[in-house]
Image 1 (cartoon, rainbow, N blue to C red):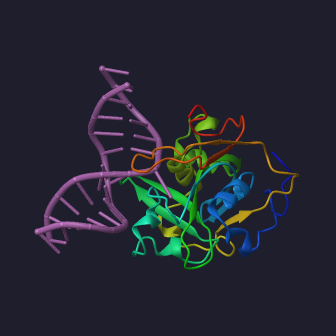
Image 2 (image 1 turned 90 degrees about the vertical axis):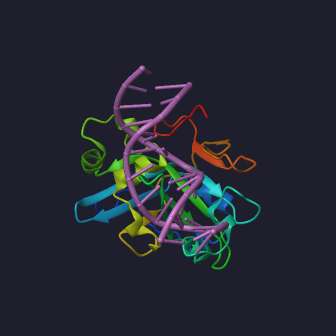
Length: 207
DNA sequence: TTCACGATTAGCT
DNA sequence: GCTAATCGTGAAG
């Protein structure tokens, strides 16, 4: 755990400025590693450190949802930065993205894995009481389930909502490993997946 | 209105 | 390693 918890028992007190998100998805993706996602719900508060992300570009990236252009679904990706883009995959799982680039320009970052920091009992209750610690939030579908994130959070402002993203108190950026993205079949793959090197909460470290 | 598909996961063989 | 589960989305009719 980098940095001791501040405020009310959770790490990371400072929110980034809107301009933090208003950049190229590749840059934002790298900078999101080590930041802390906090979700406050009726059931309680959960928080986790982001340890794995993937960038989805607005330009020339056939794997990105926004490559289909502006539709009702991709409206959020074309919207203002610093908001959550949530979609359902395979009719079962929800995936959380952070919208990047200025309004009107598409681009986002898929959050793929978290290191649970707070509200772990609640996460276990949602994921299954006997689940191994390393499997609580190590995957895009797993982390949304653990955090209690669903389609209701689509479009939420990460600077002013029950779902917020905080900068870490501790020093420096973690060591980062870069690989190709996971699960992409339709597009020419690029090295747009980033994760914290040797972190045990990363999904598919072997990929 | 209908239809095929997917940035996944869990549980089997 | 293989596959079922299950539904929002977008393109076609």
